[in-house]
Each structure stands twice: as C-alpha cells, then as structure tokens.
Image (cartoon, rainbow, N blue to C red):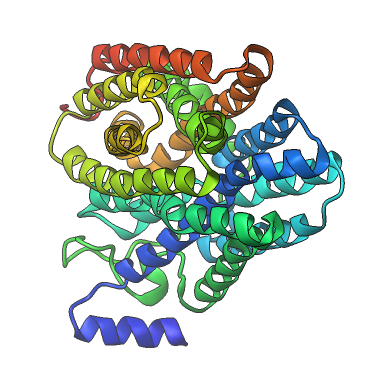
Length: 424
C-alpha cells in the first residue's frame, strides 16, 4: 500500500509518518475553514439576487456554526468508532457536494438545507476535535506546536480562498466562487483515502517522540454513543470546565460568528469593496497562522491561563477600536495585525488545560463539548450581528458587546485555579 511504502521511505530519511498525517489533517481542516468562511463573501451577492435580508441569511449561517460545534462531542465518538480516515473522507465528500449543489439554489429553504444543515454536518466532522485527536494519537513531543499549526489551518483557509472568492464574485458571479473550495475538498478526499491512517500502530510505529522502549499503542476501544454524555456529566462538576466552555463561547462570539461572517459586509457599509475587504481578512489569516503557531509553542512552556488572559484581553481591545479605525487601508491593516495574531491562538492553551484537568484519554471529548460552546457563541454572533445591522443599521453595537465579553473572558481564565493534573 502507498502509505506503508511512504512510511518506510520516510523512516529511512529519519522523518516520522506523523508529519504526513498532520499535513493531511491540516489540509482537511483548511477546507473546513474555507467552507465555513465562504458564506461571508456571499452575503451581499445573495441578498442582491434573491432579495433575502441580512437577518435571514444570518440565520442560515448561524445554523451552520451551531451544527459545526454541537457535532464536536459526537464527532469524537465517530472518530473513535469508525476511524479518522473514513470520517474525514465522508466529511470531505459532504462539504464538496453541498458547495457544488449550492450553485443551483433558488430558495432560502434550499440554502438552509445545503449551507446550514449539510455544510454544518460536514464541517462538524472535521472540526477542531479532529486536530485534537490527531495530535493526541500521533504526537508525544511537539503536541502543543502541532495543535497550534492545525488550529492555524483556519487562517490559511481564509488566506487562500476568501480573496479568490471575492474576485470570482466580482468578475463572474457568486456561483463561480464555490468551485475552488469544492475542488479542494475533492483533493482532500483523495489524499485521505491514499495516505491517512488512524493510529501509528496501523503502520507498526510509535507516536512521534514516544520512548524507544514503548510498544506501539493498541487500537482504541470501540466507543459507545453514551460516552460523550457520561464525560459531560463528569466534566460539569468541575469549575474548570465552565471557565473553559464560557471563555470559548466568547471566543466564537468574537471571531467566527462576528468577524468571519460579517466583516466583508461591515466594510461594504463603510464604502470598501469586497475584494479589498477580503484581502484584509486574508491579512488577518497570515498573522493568525503566525500567532496560533507561536501560541502552540508558548503553550508548551508557560502558564496557559496567563496566555489566555492576554489573548482575550487584547482581542477585546481590538474590537473596541475597530469602529474608530476609519476603515482606511492603514487603519484596517493595524487591526488585521493586532486582531489576527490571536484569532485562534486560544485553541492550544485551551486544549492543554482540558488535557491537564481531565486527562489525555478524555481530553478530545471534553474539548468537543468546550468547542460546542465556541460554536454556539459563533452562532449567536452570526445571527446577532445581522440583527444589529437590520434593526440598528450598524454593526458597532455587536462589536462593542463582543469586546466587553472578551474582557470578561480574560478575567475569568486568569482567576481559574491550576488544573488538577498540571502545575501551571
């Protein structure tokens, strides 16, 4: 098989196959990010063609965000029961199919079915839980760094696809903007089928960084559907869970749901075209990839509670400042740098804190529930931002609410006690 041959070749070059699995996972999560972010570029074209209001479209996108998060705990079980390669290949097929079929929509109901339910299902199976699962199975050393890189895939998805989508919309119409992300999903499907393996043991390997005398880990036991709910019942008894879930709710509120969904529309209200606005989002993606990777490195070395407090605090200040940036290229560039550096930098410290408190064997499921809170926050902001624009004719109130919530999250995580299984 190709995977075995490639693993043998890389082994002779002293390169662990874990990096191949991490690279494919990065691409899968990148496509997920592109599919989630794409509707933000479609909001105004769809509104012009079909006459749908911002509130109506926001309800579709909010459903996608909610499903993306709520499937997280169940996705952890699905990954355990059916294997990473099967689940990711199915998800890639759903994502690509829902994007392609979206070119033929004629009603809001069809948009809800394809871009709310189907896209929410496909992306939910390849959410951050996938990254946590792969990092936990394939890496002993560099786990925080790998989780940072995988979390940064969301930034790379924006960097590649949003400016291209905005240009295609402007030149050829919104339907053409669906093709690049759909094609990328097809590429991921092929790579997963050929090269992805569920565990190092499938190739007779140990996890990266595992001691030489460690036997390859046995296959994980078949998980049952009650596992995520039993894990949740245990987790809610600990204050740490509520701090992580509450702060991650605010994380989603202040990133995916608000900026990713409404930024292009917000810039349009201030006289900026979709291509320059998407370029600013792309710039955020560059700095987010840098910031999230650096966050993974820092999370292996410093108190993760202090890191999170800084991330949320700085993000809150940047959201307060955005309405006063005058939406010039210079002003938005400063925002892109300041805000972009910690867009998803919260992920590695949150994963590390969950593992320290609940143990590595349950960390992916606990993080699935924490991530569900993240996406509920994103759904609230996706709908609330559209409601703010429709009723108050401005996004500023939504930005101020999100900024204040970030400051509250910074305070909460800073006051959180040291996790039970970690020293800091």
